[in-house]
Length: 334
Ligand SMILES: NC(=O)c1ccc[n+]([C@@H]2O[C@H](COP(=O)([O-])OP(=O)(O)OC[C@H]3O[C@@H](n4cnc5c(N)ncnc54)[C@H](OP(=O)(O)O)[C@@H]3O)[C@@H](O)[C@H]2O)c1
Figure 1: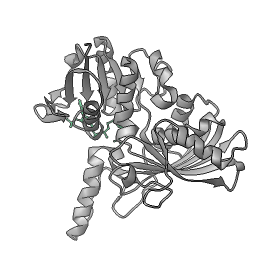
Figure 2: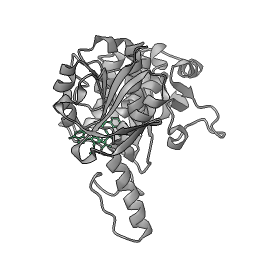
Figure 3: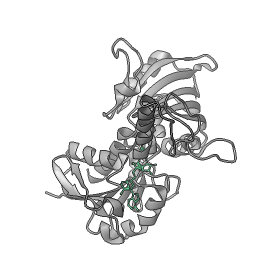
Figure 4: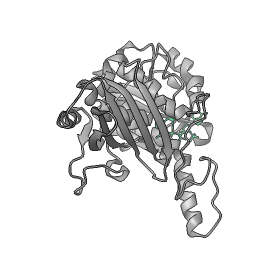
């Protein structure tokens, strides 16, 4: 039986660790699984299910004989290693934002635009984590009406900033308990007991890089070049899973019953009807699994019958990153 050799680039990070876990959970006939990271991690042990793997320092020749490289490193590192990966003949499924808007790089959520994955030239990009969760939540609605406008407010977990984001919140919790002064370096100010309405870096239009991903990536994935999105991204002191409040303006009147049925029928989506008596998910409800939960589905009081408001939550390290990348790999080997 054909087996597939897979390298995880950034295998010691928040996303890379999850990629190894997700790879072990699926029915993929795996050959070699390589764990690549920086020189400082070389020799450490990581696990892909029961398989113990010794982490290797990433070098230009690390990708030889690999079929796939799952990227979970910074933009700079993804850019640095792209030529060597492509030269090796492996398909690079990258989680950074370095190539997402490049014309020759498909940007893929398998449940929405899986067919785009097959147009790759060696590189496929995984979308932004909040964008994946949001687009999964509205994918069913997009099948019954054209989405013209979206207002989105995100409530993003600290793990969205990687391993160091989790460490910063946990350190501040300890400092609070010990009565010490809070220190911060990952986030622009204290995140414990706080909400920070600034993620990414500021652009000329006063929005942040993170906020503009929702429109720019949303247009490309949904094949809606005219889609207008107004997004505000907020970091909150939650360890894992992102939540998004969404307001949609559609091209026609749609009943709430039809909207709810569309959400129920959307692959990878769950309409929250009774989670311990609640009709809405929270980050804790959705952590460590792959489905995006949608709740609080209601009429938008501004756009009337053409408007829908909803709340959604998804595990951004799994469906927002690792699982989506592994699902792209699965599409290609089917
Ligand atoms: N966290 C999320 O929820 C999320 C969601 C979607 C997309 N993403 C994107 O996914 C990527 C990874 O994010 P993350 O949150 O997993 O970051 P992270 O926890 O900070 O992990 C970064 C990884 O990069 C590795 N690395 C650093 N320098 C390297 C080098 N010179 N050569 C090879 N590897 C090197 C690190 O290895 P060492 O341990 O050796 O330093 C580590 O494995 C980023 O582009 C991020 O924007 C993250």
